[in-house]
Length: 324
Image: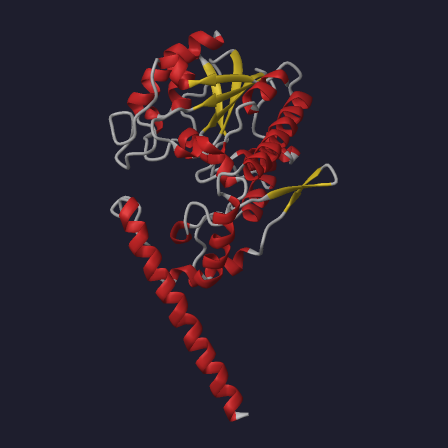
């Protein structure tokens, strides 16, 4: 019995020693690509003692109970805005990461068009999260019926294709509990998630990351899998919205920036197929005459997310194009 207890203690010690070493290695890699003043590294123990972010089950429970506080508020919404409204989806770009309310895409769009904009984007999320939210009828509860929703706008970046099959996004140190993986089975979308408590371990996350990297190698087979999944999620999301708002138009706004290697995940016919399905596909480079540039005035201080300047540049031609 004593020997058994000693073995257990030794195993636990070795496990956490290795786990901590992997944490430190990830910390070194994280510092190479991230401004840790803006996005600090959490102490190791907090990954075991605290919730890293809002989990999807908690999120869903909250809005069933009428709590929508985790979505970005739009102070420009008003009863005086009588034009049809717009639903906004996407990730941190659409959410407005590191921007004040009045600097965001949704605030400025609302002010310029006199429309209410309901921002339902979530940081570190993607196409699958839009479908997850739309799949519950309670999601629409706080959105008033009149005025009607005329447009759904999804702000897309190519990295959203990688997120479809990645369980350690954005990286093990700032792993979001909003992780969501769907798979197609018998012509249905099935959630294929691993219990979130396992992701507290850096050993487990390292093993998952190895599998993620294999799934994200740019090959025709991997890209086709991403296309099939993205296409199905977009189509099902559009169908849900059309059942709720029969005349709604679905816009996919592709946010183009230079040196985006994630475009390698896109199949050349992907957007043609979605256009044939009734989506309006717009590219920011066509609207402003160039691609956005990272680490420039187009971005906030992290050098990545869109700045107020970028939205000010994009919104006038976008409004004109859609006749908003």
